[in-house]
Each structure stands twice: as structure tokens, then as C-alpha cells.
Image 1 (cartoon, rainbow, N blue to C red):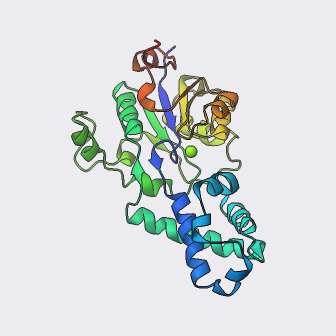
Image 2 (spheres, helix red, strand yellow):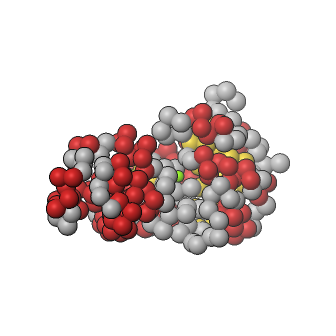
Image 3 (cartoon, rainbow, N blue to C red):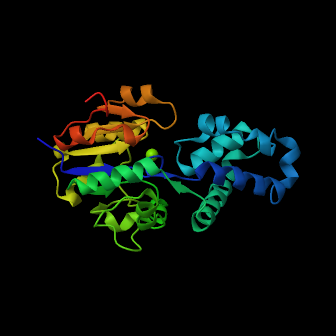
Length: 261
Ligand SMILES: [Mg+2]
């Protein structure tokens, strides 16, 4: 049996999204302006908001929960009450960053998307983030293909990543989030491909779990040195770059590393 469909997560798989930057910049603005009166009561300083703090305290949490965790970390008074204002400020920041194109698509992911599509598989995007479509519609595939010296007939002038998708369920409201498989099962349904003939590309453990719970194959993408987490979550193959996936193996329905197969 071979694969007929591929479903891509967006943040961390296709796009290096500026969430961390938006959180950092949002708090800096609040502390300098609206919240300057309580600043002396906190442990906050701009340079203390490190990538390590972001990963440990905030990453992977829903917007307001992440905001509250960060405020508690910096001992900001009334963290629970202020979390909403901080979360809303972060959303304003991220929209500004998206509109200013302050993000980039991962080149290995674009090469892989194009190769898989060219093999005749149907492709979908499935992100729970409300911002995902704003990223997808700003990634110009025609420019990427030209820059890489590639040639694909299905990439017409002006085409973005959004234009070549066969289905897109990003940003929709689902009853249950990952690790529940609902989002991926809906994507497969809209691709008109049975789940067992699909594979999901995910960088998060709960996304890998969602794929497996939906009876799909899972390709784990460990961009943050977290191979073990993805393996433990049940990924059928874990790579650190999508360039490492064997396209020959894919063509006969197997997820294997290039070079070993
Ligand atoms: Mg992700």
C-alpha cells in the first residue's frame, strides 16, 4: 500500500513563526508603559526573558495560560488578572510581525511539500493556530522554486503555499485539540483519502499522538533537539530535517531515512 495523502502541521514544521518574539516584545512594551508602576515589584528585565525561559515556562500552552505562567515567573502582581491583557498584547504583536513578514518558511519543508505534491500525493495543512493561514498566504512558492533552481508545473506565477494545498483545516474550531485526532481526521476526509493511507508531519509530541490516534502514520520533525520526545510519542520516523526523508521509500508507502534505504 502506498501513501495518498500528507497532512502538515504549520508552526514549527512549515514556518519558523515569531511567537517567542511576540511574547517578549509584548511584555517589554507593557512594562515600559502601562505597567511601569509595578515594575519595581517584579524580577523582570528585558534580558531575563531568555529563550530558555520561553521554552520552559510558556511554550505549548494556550495563550492566556502561557501569559499567566510568564507573569508568575517574573513575579508580576495580579498575574491572573493581567494575563488577559498580556495575551491580547501578544496577539497584536504577532499580527504586526506577520504583516511585516518577520518570519520565514523552512526551506527543507518547502522542498518536501513540493516533492510530495509532485509525486501525486494530496496535501493538506492542519494547524490549530488562528494565525496559520496568515503565514501560508505570505509564503511565495514561485519565488522559492526559482531561487532553488527547481521546476514544478503546478507552481504558477504568484502562487503561495496556500494555493497548492488540496485541503486546509487550519484555524477552524474543533471540539477537541491535539492529541485528539479530530483535526487530522477532518483533513484526511477533505483530502478524500482514508486515514491509513495518510501520514502527518508534526514537530510536537501531542501532534504525533493525534496522528497515531487517528490511525495515520506520523513523521516526527525534531527541530529543537527533541527526537526522544517524538519517538516516545509514537512517531514512525523522526528526522531533524525533511531533506532526510527517503522519497523512494515514500513512493511505496514507507517512512524511512534517506541513505539507510
Ligand atoms: Mg507545531
